[in-house]
Image 1 (cartoon, rainbow, N blue to C red):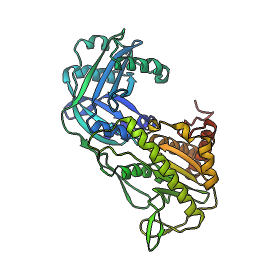
Image 2: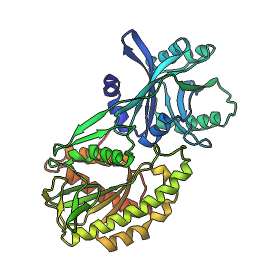
Image 3: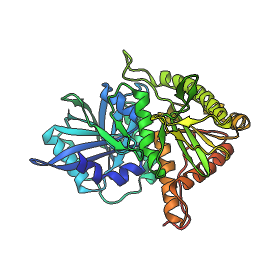
Image 4: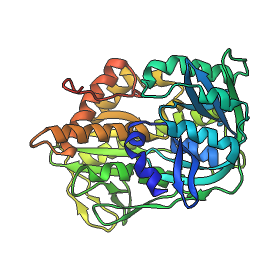
Length: 405
């Protein structure tokens, strides 16, 4: 499992969702292996029993293969790839005879979260046209429209005018969880366990994994403020340095503790409520900071928090696609938050937070005195300008350097 993760680590980290087939080395030789990287939310649907389907088709003389996850019966999640190497094609051909292979699930951080063995029966007659497809490098973006339309056409049960097939992927064993642990810069343990029933805590740990290395002092999980003789949480995650402060309020969705899997529409309704609550909590946290209320870590040590510079407030949600009313979080909403707090509001999901952190690290590497934390602060500021121009908080931004090839 570790070999698989390292082999695909760069590609997996640069792509929010990905599906690949590989011929991985095993004890008895090469084994056809399916690799799926997706949001933690989608992975939960998979391990909770959502149906899976493998789709393979000939697309403009190339070999298109993808997986459908029926998290939503009317519109299943679809991930696809165009085969570029003999490894991918040989793995598909091998499944005609093997009819069983492992499926590994990776989360947003490219961490292997779970795996199982699945049954898959590829029709023997498909070997003729699979072998007759082109290989070699391909620009996936140039084929996105064509491939997506074909996948949707096949999803709707329409007959395609090119060779294709779709087969169900049936787990033959229970899902096996992979346990991952990160030691923070402050010496705490941040565990990532997909099956953990504390789903809110798990999303916070994902955010800790992403932000902790932005500065040597790390991120602070669950900073505390006084409440009478006791203390209460200020926010879920705090980052602070000499030029600014970032507050992160994480809101997740319950999947494991429900008797039946919720529809995506039901989750979308929950997300709207969570965003409103998170913004209210961030407003309250901003007031406490402006009032000079002391802040402590969970050990009781008081923290030095920068309070004079405008801060960034981040609402962390599981998936942008669940925000069904993005127009509600436009210029007026943004300006109202800024007037009330003197801070900048952001809505990110885990995949977008990863992109922001990666962008900060790239900016820092190109500078001579810019730290990752400074670059993170700067990039959030530039991102805030883009969201205001777009009249929408839930946007995805890709960093490009003008001198990049």
